[in-house]
Length: 406
Image (tube, rainbow, N blue to C red; front, side, top):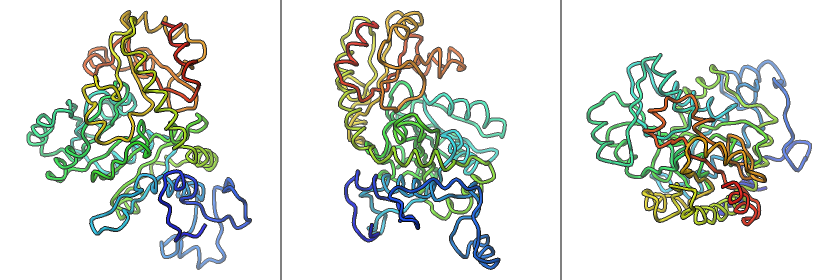
């Protein structure tokens, strides 16, 4: 494809962005399963190592399969967004072996001993443990409050001048809380604080955090971007291209959290159908949420596509649709959750999310099992909470399976 040809549609970008014609004219980018890359002569090797010439050296540092995915996701996250000069926003992405590897690069690459990180309740369990158990060993302190209250956010920033980053997860895992990206980013920028956003649940199809001025966008690409549960991955995308190219690339390489060509290949294929999948995921999810809202077995439904959700207005402001993720609380608590999970027939019992099939998990006994009970309760993760990633099946089959399990 001619690089100068303008791509304006999301699916067009998902299909074509980042792709370069293979030298052997393969239609689909081959899997470059090579640990190293060769040079025409010693001088070329010198130029590549010095940075004078672009090119691949070692797959821990970069690989053609990584590059295509990095450029594709960057293009999707910035589609239609302009920089301060009116030109298309340029960002840099680094593909990682997992979401946690990308989060490690984000945290270690931007925070140092004595710094603090501000975030909110109800985060992905791995992130929760990283900031509460690992980072404090390096004298990096988390401050966790309800950032849906902007007054509390402002008070925390004023009281803690060592806050260097705000990490946001919206919609949040697993209670689907949403925070206001625009207002929190304005507050952060007024205080010279970096903003990072986990966009895993929404994907760039439903939400583009860079539109609100954030510094970093993160994804566990394992989820909706891959879409088929076939590969683990994570990506970190940054607005400060020089910092991404130098300090954060160096941090990433030294931590060793690089992806691999096969997983990158699978991710690239999955992204190509992202728009189609997210449309079906989202339409199925709102139907499920409405069905569950007044169900006798359920005490609460967390879905910001329902007007009853406290974050409905914020979600509507910054998201195209409410998306595929739902959580709900069963009245019978822990045993009710276990019984319900055991009775599912078609829907899948497992952790993770974002695959083509409908997945349900019981956070209290699975993803958030290691978090202390008091902390889980404070974050809204009750014993009867069920998290649901609504899949692409026929909607009536999904509803029938849920009903018989209740």
